[in-house]
Image: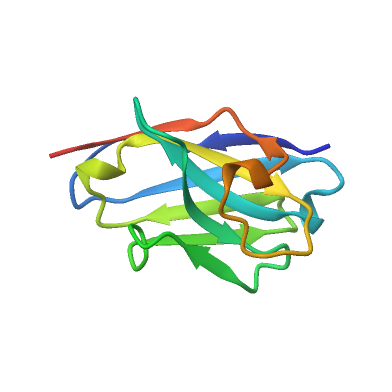
Length: 125
């Protein structure tokens, strides 16, 4: 079992930055690939970024490539998402997800076993 708790969301102006964190507990975290997803009102939950269990490989949605950076610290059981040059269309609830798998990247919601409750990000224009 893996428990995930996101933090770091908030209100920011367009062009600004935020850093989301996902704190994980559970013995299997360090073997989990991790992902960030987001869901805006009335829309499907969409993939944002993923990082392999050792942290050596990352993968991003085209919409955030070059602006967002995913990282992890297995010693601290955390995964971070640094978001720069934020746009109003980045407004959503952001979720951290985890899965032990031989495959990477995992970009579908159904591919992840564990989810946090999410943290809200609102970008004003």
